[in-house]
Length: 110
Image (cartoon, rainbow, N blue to C red; front, side):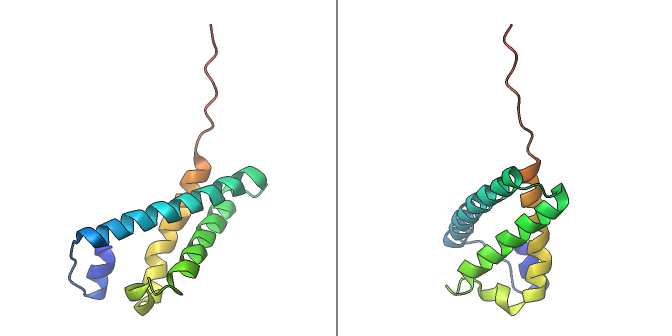
């Protein structure tokens, strides 16, 4: 968020309500995106990177579908290319991290 503010020429500021809104919305979007990426990983035979890109793109589309009609996108809509350039790699990285988790095998009982 600070990087976005600095690039767009807005003075970065910290507010408790703003931070709470980012944390809560990030948790909700992350939970939904994590479930989608997990299901994609579990139920498809797509290779890892195409699956991560698909999961990240779906997460971006899902967030835009909720944020834009509810007028929550504000500054992001004023700089759409910058928003996409900064957010899409993070969403793809999130999708890759969710899908890359290691399946832990139960320890053998001796």
